[in-house]
Image 1 (spheres, rainbow, N blue to C red):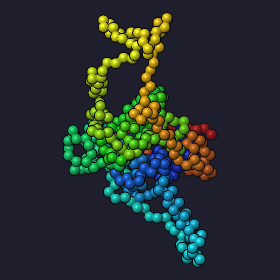
Image 2: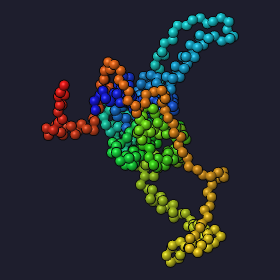
Image 3: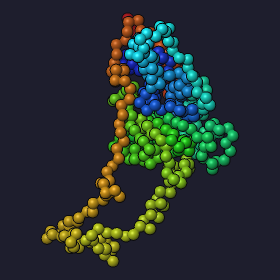
Image 4: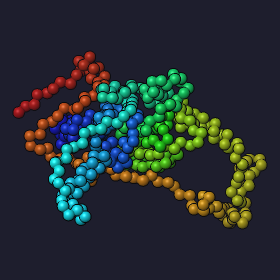
Amino acid sequence: MGKSSKDKRDAYYRLAKEQGWRARSAFKLLQLDEEFNLFEDVTRVVDLCAAPGSWSQVLSRVLIKGEKFGRSAWQDREAKFRQQMLNIFPSSEDHESPPPTEPTTAPAPTPRKDVKIVAIDLQPISPLPGIITLRADITHPATVPLLLRALDPDHPVDQRNQQASQRVDLVISDGAPDVTGLHDLDIYVQSQLLFAALNLALCVLKPGGKFVAKIFRGRNVDLLYAQLKIFFDKVYVAKPRSSRASSVEAFIVCIDFRPPEGFTASLEEPLGVGTRLPEMLAARREVLPITAAPGLVQDEETGAWKAVASAAAQVDEDGICDLEVEDLTVDDGRRDIRWIAPFVACGDLSAFDSDASYRLPEGHVSLDPVQPPTAPPYKRAIELRRAHGNAPKKVPVKG
């Protein structure tokens, strides 16, 4: 597909090149910040699955260079507008109008102090100002010591010590697997990638920190939300305006990190359980008392449960047993209902629709990508085809 047709189909792809972003996904992070104020009081960040580096580029321009986008830029515009209104319309207590002021210029960028940003990906990432890049696998336990040393060069070299001494404020992940088109398989692989990112985040996040990651919404996504709610006080599902509505992707935004008491994160035992789950379940069954529903007795020889007539269980002439189920309630007397994560749409409704096609203006010049792929997945395939003399040739277009 040519550049012109892609520019016409996706306005955010064109805007990313015009505004100097490496990928259109930069708008997703900016729109998430507009809604949740992700960058407030943030100086230490870990960007997982960072290639080609658009989210790291946003962090570099906001935290290191001090540029303002999203919520902070909107607040500055509102403050400037209010100041202009105060200069135009004096208060009723003042009889004389204030002296005319010169037009205010845009405030100079204010970089933050002691900023530390670490980006990790299996693919190489082109350098960014102030960003520490690591080429590593976030699912491998050996990645944790590399990350801890990048965050703190004085961290002791100990494979068993997988807790950061200087924790971070924010962990973000825009990673996704190469989709196959089989939605159930893609959703499962994405969930496993998310759990790897979450477990790595648990090793480095400080209490009160934030975690943002891409998810694929599927049939059992509610279970994922409930698992994240164990570690975070607030969990939201967000859909930025720049994310296509036709896509199953969304972003999970977890705020206020509060790990359970006694929990210790480690990639060797994901989420504190790892491969010990069958043993833990067996040990729990051994200590639990053997109980049965009213009206059931256990055969001593076969061990099978049989229904008997009782006040709570009546067997009719056809042998059908009706059992009364106890009403389970929580301690305060309310019915225990399922917790549902709030769904939030991010981005200005007047912004471009990522699913729409827009007519290109007259004299439009298609720009090259800001950062071409450094190691695309198809690079090896092209090299093999060229080695066998099967490289694609350009066919001249007849007029």
